[in-house]
Length: 103
Image 1 (tube, helix red, strand yellow):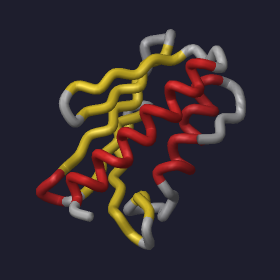
Image 2 (cartoon, rainbow, N blue to C red; image 1 turned 30 degrees about the horizontal axis):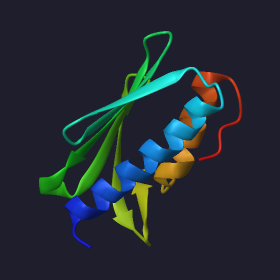
Image 3 (cartoon, rainbow, N blue to C red; image 1 turned 90 degrees about the vertical axis):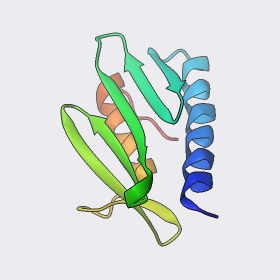
Image 4 (tube, one colour; image 1 turned 135 degrees about the vertical axis):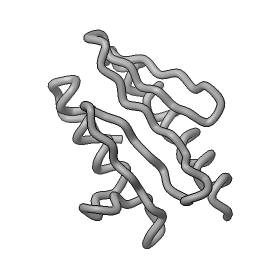
C-alpha cells in the first residue's frame, strides 16, 4: 500500500469512528475538505489532520501545536514520542470532551 492509499484508509476509518462518537451524543463535528480532516468542538477548538505526501507523513495540528506521524511498525507513530495516531487522538479527544474516549 502506498502513502496515499494508507492515508485515505486511515482517514476513512477515523471518519467512521468519529461518526460513532457523535451518534453516542458527543459534542463534536468533523468535515473533510479534499485530503484534510478537521475535527471541531463547540468551544471553537479544532484538530486538523493533513497529509504531507512529499515527506510521507501525517501532520496533526491540535491545541496550538503540531505533531508529525510516520508509518512505522504497521501504525502511524509520532516521530518524537512513538505514540500511535490512535493513542494520540484518544488522549486529545478525551481531554477536549472531558470523558474517556476509545477509538
